[in-house]
Length: 244
Image 1 (tube, rainbow, N blue to C red):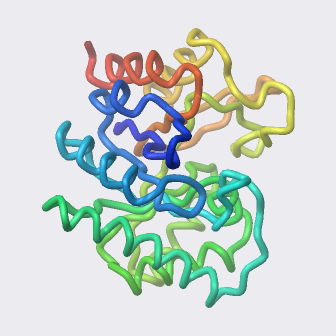
Image 2 (cartoon, rainbow, N blue to C red; image 1 turned 90 degrees about the horizontal axis):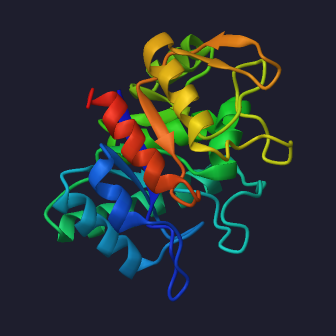
């Protein structure tokens, strides 16, 4: 089980997250690519930080929506979406190359991530984008009960999928994330986060808001870098995953 976190989401003088403190506890760093957050300086510093700690670098592309932090859906044609997607991957890859490192995977951000999981046309556009850019890069998607359907679609593009679960977000009875507009959609105590993390690691399942247990297979666990509990959560997961 790998630990991943959304990183490099500051912008200019505006600071977000605890990247320097959290990075040592991670296996994977999802680095924003300048569309929903970040800028070239932040991207370069975050790549340097990940390299310093031996953390695998992933591109974290989103909708071009700085004001909305990429959490608002945008209607885009397939060609437009693919172009914006590849543009972001290329920007981060260029910075990685300048630091003598490389991208290891791709994980879409926010509303784009949610759209990918709900709309096959969006999912296939992103698969096409990865294939055109570098078909060796795995695409990180949500661990859901019907994961085999996504694997079948990805296989037609020759793209490997990595499935992720979330320790700090609540799930609905369909095994998907509860919308942020719903009360209780995010876990606000370390105790609740630990409980969900242990269940995911030991049982490969989550307990939904209604109390239903849903089985999901995850390759990696996600921490939201902008969360108030990101640092203690990273420490906790590092201990649990590594048996410390």
